Every structure is written in structure tokens, then in C-alpha cells.
Image (cartoon, rainbow, N blue to C red; front, top):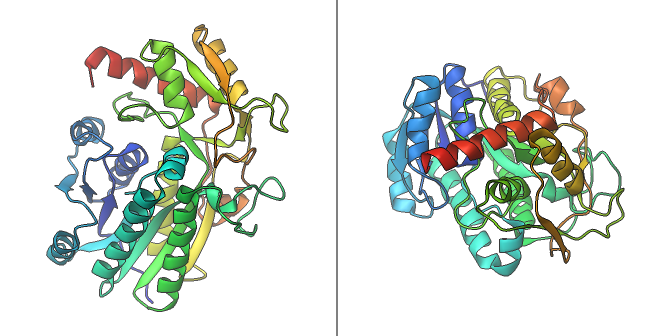
Length: 346
């Protein structure tokens, strides 16, 4: 398969948290972008916020990837697409444990529909995967060669299945090249404070819950377990700034465009290579802002991994990418975004 040069990039779920930051970085690198999103977990205002940051309005089509007729029509009507970055998916570990069928429907059927719509098209494809594919790792930092274990949650299982589908599909055709990025824990917001994580309803992730507690939207923060085998008893995660993560997607597209892939399907860890505990993160936020958080310890949450952080040397070498922001920058930018939301009733 020959290398595909720069064309239009389709970003599914592009008004969401990671998607919106990736659209910004794509535009900053000269790409034309079209967003597909059903707005089930995002806000249409984000499109205008992206334009305010970059000066360029991305294309936007409201579309649910489960609607095969509309999806096939869209793909057929956009012949200049050369790249796809696929974010659109449900993403809460806890919710997936409670409602697994929602996750298998939304995360697996949409990927299959998208690949079927693209099957006659030569395309570079970046998949939003997750470190959850490793389960509870046998060694740390975890490398891309680590065993993919039985998933700890339906969410994690959908990422494993998604990777399998893409690996097998890429191996069966000359039209598809795939880079799967196994994210660790994205946090933070754009330096403009115009886009960031915008959970609908009760946050499912730690940092937005910290922010909403600090600003007074939530009465208290619950830490899920404090008796794990870690330094302070709380879970340990590899937190990565969302802008660094967004830049990794651009690096993946450029790797494919330059014809540098060794195989039709590749995987990369995307993190900082450093683990922080939940309590460390809370303490760091309190030190940065001077705000004392009201938090309580609750029972451990089903599906949670105790501790994980990644070996990111492969991404640094082969994607020519490296995370640049530390935990302080992550939390400072997230707090600036939370204050923007509060002041602007976003």
C-alpha cells in the first residue's frame, strides 16, 4: 500500500474532550477537518470555540455512527478524505459495568459500521484505544508488548475488541493502515481555556470531579478506595495533558502519510511514563490553588486497575513525539477551564 498524502481528516466524536483538542492540533498543522458527532456527550458550542482558537471553522455534521444509511451517504459524499481519527465511543469504566450492552452497541457496532463504509477507500486510520487493554499489568512501566489480559470492565473489553477488529481488517486489505494509540489518563485543557473536559451530568473521571468540587458544583469528592497496595493506598495513574495527547494523533497521521509504518497495524502507548496516585493529584491541586477539597473515601470501584503507567519510549522514537506538560500544568489548565465554564455558563 502506497503512502497517502495529506487530505481531509475525518474526526468522529470531534466535539468531545480529546477530539476537540485534536481538531485544534490538526488545524494548526494545516489539515482540513470534518467532525462527525451525534452530540450525545458534547456541546455544539465547541465548534465555535475551536474557531476562536484557530481562526478556522472545522466542518461539522451531526451524525450517529449507528445510522448506517446516513454514514455510508456521508462517506460517499466526501471523496477527499484520506485520514480518519475515531474517538466516538462511550468511555466510563463504571457505567460500562452497570450497562455493558450500551458499550458493546455504541463502541463496537459504530466501529464496524465505519470500517464497512470505508472499505473501498484507501485511508489512514487512528484508533482511540486505552491502557485498559492491559488489565492489571504484571510489570511496570507497561510496554506495548505486554500481554493483553482479560478486561477488567466492558469498556476495556470494547477497546480490546476494537483493536482486534482493526488488526484483522488491516491484515486483510491493502486499503487500510491503522495506528492504535493506547491512552493513559488524559487531563487538563487548552491554554486558551476555551475548550476542555465538559462532562454531561455527574463526572465519571477524577479531574472534572475535583474541579467541580473545588468550584462548588459538587459537595464532596469521593476517592474510590484507600487500601490498595500503593504508597498512600489510592490508585496510581499515568496522567497526560490532553494537548500532548492530541499532538500524538497528528504525529500518527504524519507517520502514515510519510510511509514510515513497519506494518499495516501498529500500537503505541501515549502517556508521560510516570505514575501519580489519586491522593497525590489532590494534594497537588490544593497546593496550586490554595483550595482545600472536601473529599471522602468510598469503597473500591468495580473495574478499576490498582496501578498503571506506561513505557512511552516507542512513541518517542517512532512517532517523534513526547509529552511536554507535567501534572502542575495539567491541573492549572483544568482549573482555568473550570473557571471559564463557571463565568460563561458554558
